[in-house]
Amino acid sequence: MKAVLIAPRKYIQGRNVLAETGSYAILLGGKAMVLWDAMVKNLVGQTVLASLKAAKVEVVEVNFGGESSKAEATRVADIAKKERVDMVIGIGGGKTLDTAKAAAAWANTKVITCPTLASTDSPTSSFTVWYNEQGDCTGFDGWPFNPDIVIVDSQVIAQAPVRTFVAGMGDAMSTWVEAEASYKTRHGTLAGGVPTMASIAIARLCYDALMAHGVDAKRAVENKVVTPAVEKVIEANTLLSGLGFESGGLATAHMIANALPSFPECKKFYHGEKVGFGVISQLCLDDDMTPEKSYPIIDWEIAVGLPVTFAELNLAGIKRDRLKQIGDICAGKGSLCESHAFEVTSDSIVDAMIAADALGRERKKLLGK
Image 1 (cartoon, one colour):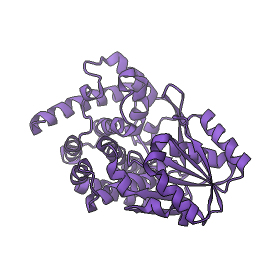
Image 2 (cartoon, helix red, strand yellow):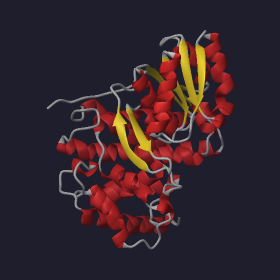
Image 3 (cartoon, helix red, strand yellow):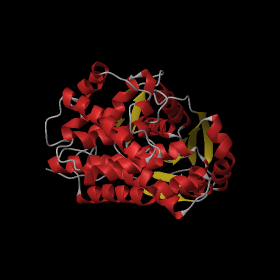
């Protein structure tokens, strides 16, 4: 049984590092496609283009269409091939970066990811999550390698809406909870093998950083400032979570989160917000859950502002028969729930979600929230 760890070739994080984009891009070649939307270009365009120009990197700009669909990735890849670029530089949110990764893979070229949000762990991963034009998740694909370079500008991240930052913490909080489940069974990971000791240590470090610095980091981002706590949480959301989920393993928290968008009421929520509720559901599903293990996580989610009840997901009063849709998906063949050391059934998933809602309501009441 082989163990596999995968990672980007280079990761750079810090205040104003987007001004150094050109010095890193030139390492990969002299011609770059920059994929972004108008809002992102308005935000960081002058800085990035000036840096690329100073490094004598030729630029082909492409406007991102809005969804990481296969049609959009094909369009971008075709331009990359026609222009014979040496790299695709994706700048923006997770869907932009996922499209850049797919297009680069299909065009057989290098890729640089530059997130403007710390809302997901997409920037470091080798995967693209696909959506249709209606915004529904339709699956994912993995590419032979992770991004060549990841550039994370903490100053830009701190100016983004705090809700996106908190969503990233929800996504990252699942890293240790799911990796622990996968490690118990030595279940295969997205990296193509069982978890390494390194990936488990990284997943645990992600958890520890969030628990220690999450609340302080949120407060700082609410005030648009970069502090040591913000830097630590950006690294947890982006690098530690990215390495941890790919090489450490996924389980029920992500399976529930991936199924929730099938409910129209949940469309407006970020992926990490849905993962946050999935974490509590997985804790309630786990056969070795104890208050000592679960309550600190739930209380932390409440403190940073993640949804911990059905009502906070716009699902107040939801009936068991509707939740069965998610239960059936989670219990299906090939589900991420197979990472657990026990059988996961549709009924056990529904029971866990109902228990999670009740626990979330109880803890909020006790905490006066």
